[in-house]
Image (cartoon, rainbow, N blue to C red):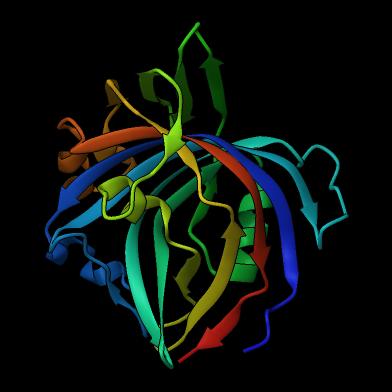
Length: 241
């Protein structure tokens, strides 16, 4: 199949990724038609992610004033889909938060993604060796924070590790309707990561994601890391039935 047109180019930087093992029953209602849950060693994961969205351009060259640099926080899980002989490994979002209402509305309209808007701030520090990153946001009067720290230098993830599984998903899927889904490709180079020595989510996860996800987010993550990130390309989507 020919590569679809690039809709958006940007950089994703300083990705804080907290990963939690979950029971599959919690996710079944969120799985779009045409895909299935992806597993790592028989286990299913969700990730709470905060990152910087930088140098954003539509169609590779159109910069929208006041909408080129912003933060995003999302809760995601992992799926796969067979296309001929190819296994496409992708991501489904439970909720995505950005600080600009226009971005949220546009993403909902074009890709059917579950975007909402709220104020978000970040703080990134680079000590002599290592990194500390946090993302804070306010949602309906409540404060939330996602943070991680790591030492040393980042490295490419090793094949067969959980970090490799989490980062090597290059497709996005969303439910356009009960019978129709949207599929789109996200292209980027493999990332280097710091495995976190301390990571946490602070806030009432139930207020954001409901009781089941809220209970999961109350515990320490099963793994956490910070990814350097890279330039990315988001290609135009297509409907799958």
